[in-house]
Every structure is written in C-alpha cells, then in structure tokens.
Amino acid sequence: MRFIEARLSPREEFGLQLTAGVLLVALAMAVFHALAVAVLGQGGITVLDVQVAQWFHAQAFEPLTSVMRIISMLHTGIPMVLLVLALAAYFWRIGAHYWLLALLVATPTGALLNVAIKYTIQRPRPVFEEPLVSLLTYSFPSGHTAAATMFWGLLACYLVMVRPQWHARLLAVLLSISMVLLVALSRMYLGAHYLSDVLAAMAESVAWLAIWLTAISTLRRRRAARQYQAAMVEAQASGPGQN
Image (tube, rainbow, N blue to C red; front, side, top):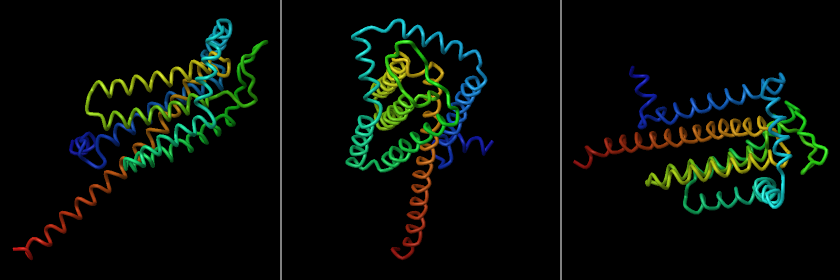
C-alpha cells in the first residue's frame, strides 16, 4: 500500500506524474500497435480507409481545397520549424528551461521516428485518377499529423501547467485538439493519407511526447528533491554554530 500511495502522490519524485506518464505511453503505444498490425495484415480498417479516402476525394471543391492546402503547408518543413523556433525562443526568454529541453528533444527525434516507421511499414499512399497531391514517400503514419500533435500537444501541456484558471486550460486543450484534427482532416481531404495513417500519427506522437515530458519532469523533480535535501543538511549543519 505504501508503494501504491507513493506512486499516486503528487509530491513524490517518482509519484503521480511518472505514473500518469507511464499509463499514457502504454495506452498510446497499444493504439498504435493495433493500427499498425491491422494495416500490415490488411485488417478491416483498411477497407474503411479506402472508403473514407474515396469519399473525401469525391467531395473536394474550391475554395475548401485551397484552405486545406494552407493548413497542411503550415505544419511541414520551414513553417513547422519556424513555429518550433518561436516557441523555443519564448521558453528561453521566460526561463522555462525544462520545457525548452522537452521541445528541442521531442520534436526532432519525433520527426526521425516518424520517418523510420514510414520506411519500416512502407505503406503506399492513396491512389486516385486525378489526385490533389502527388507524393513519392510512404503513407503510414502521417508526418504532418505527427508534427502537429507533437507541437500543439506540448503547447497545451505547458499552458495547462502554468495557467491557474480552468477556462484558460480548457481553451488551450480545445485549441490544440482542434489544430491537430484540422491537420489530420487536411491530409485525408487532400488524399495524402488514409484514416488509419492520421490516427496512428496521433498515437505515435502522444506516446513520444509523453515519454519525454515524463522523463524531463522526473529529472526536474529529482533535482529539486536533491537541492531540498542539500539545503536541509546545510541548515542542520549550520544550526549549532549559529546557536
């Protein structure tokens, strides 16, 4: 019981935050694994993938297509790098060094992980007679959706931690979820990805972000605990001399 209480205590250095992080990683990885197995085994979701892709392609019209192109473009390449650098500059300016570390570690390694998975699964992209976009890379999982989930998810976590007002926290979460869903929708609408591609990308980035946030949070709490213990020892050592 003492072990369980320590794992659920927000004051323990290996307490509630680590427990929640591990559970979130396990859940996200389970979702990703189920999707990957279904895609590789041509499971039922691949039939749904084709149906959803064909439906989106049949509904395409201007100016919605141009809007979807813009949303998609803002979450790849140079625009995505600029978003990350802008957030990094903000973290540096306010002294949020642990958040800066999480951002600079999780985003580039997450992008590399996504590429590695693509070339491991090697799933072809959707094919249409008149495609809206033509890409030569693999489809599973969606890189745009993974990047959006990583960036907006980290930003939401930061705002939830630093904003005391519940409505500000709720707004941050809703905004981040909306942005991720918009990017995922744009990739399916443009015919660049299947439904399972974007779902897997979300699960992938949630797991990866949870791993790094949990690790860095645990590092911060351990350092804080050591500093507190050192201060207590110093105070006890200097106490008799002062008396």
